[in-house]
Length: 188
Image 1 (tube, one colour):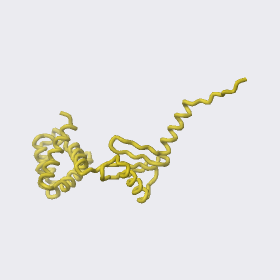
Image 2 (tube, rainbow, N blue to C red):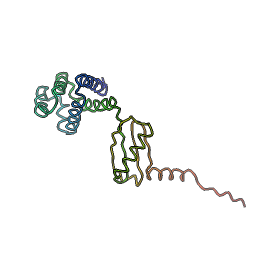
Image 3 (tube, rainbow, N blue to C red):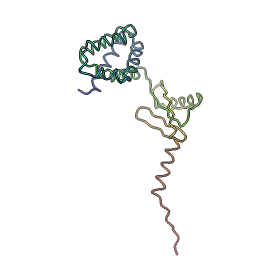
């Protein structure tokens, strides 16, 4: 079975249990924290290592997360350790966050600009995106600066891309000039 399918199924189980017990937001905090910890290369290698025994991994989890995470989240982590699914934990965390956003009708929109934008500019773009109806009712706006755009902006969400950057427009002009050679129509 693929890691994506495993992650999706375990995330669905956790999200259903969290909803049932009214701990959806609390578990989300735990999962986001775990996802951040999973970015540590050593921690990730320890999780995926077949040499490190499950009981050792459980002790590490208790040291790192015990008392900080909800008991339901800790029980879920212990179950995954016993089933040997700890290598998929980072993917399960990612999938949980995606499923949470679907439940809460949250669209993640990435705004890439050539220079940092003012708060008013970001708010105006966010309002335009909401008014378009192309996204969910709630928007999580992630901003990024990429000087290679020269000017303008790029908006990405779901499988959509709106590129209003100067670099993109220059690229289009370059392609147009390559294929449109001037041929003189002067007849002698």
